[in-house]
Image (cartoon, rainbow, N blue to C red; front, side):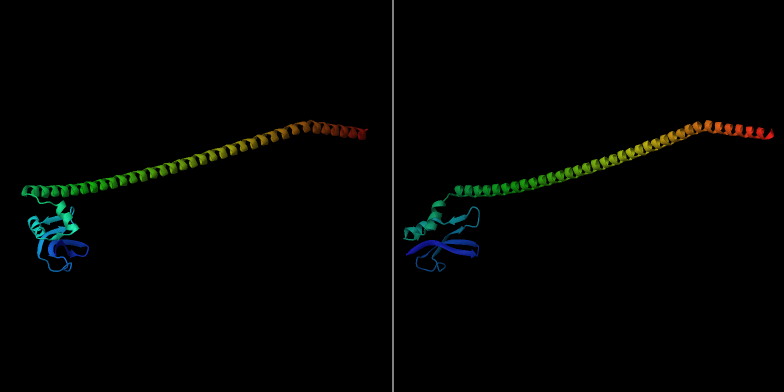
Amino acid sequence: MLAISLMRMGSKGKPFYRVVVKEKRSKRDGKYLENVGTYNPMLNPAEVNLKHERIQYWISVGAQPTDTVRSLIKNNPELSEEERAAAVEAKKAKVEAEKQAAAEAKKALAEAKRKAEEEKAAAEKAEAERLEAEAKAAAEAEAKAAEEAAAAEAKAAEEAAAAEAKAAEEAAAAESTEAEAVAPEATEATETAETAETATEESKAE
């Protein structure tokens, strides 16, 4: 009994199939009677080329297509030259549209990456400016505090010097007053002593 089935070709991971007519009991990759088409699932969309006239001939003489081949025949009907050309153009347009979409997606990704880098750079710049402003403000505050401390220290020293000068002045005034108070007493004592001495001398003279 004849069968129309797929014969695997191609390398590992890159399958490619022939649509062949062969004895149903023969080995999967054994001899076949005729190659009536090809099927390449690695393309997008998959590429299917069928010789519909030869397939119909073999079906008419009793060949049985497998389920997979039957699906390929159903989904890839025989086309006229115009329909085939239109299908080729549609396939090309689809591939081109996919390429364009991929290019636009790549461009959008690059643009998003560029924008993200710009935003990151702007954020880093803003952070650096903020830190610089904080450092400047801290330095100014420290300088102002040091200036105020120096001014307060100078004022305290000035006040202490004034207080010391005032105390010295008051002490000198007190000493002067005390000296003035003691002077009359000393004069009076001196005069008394002189009077007594004079009296004594007069007494001796008599």
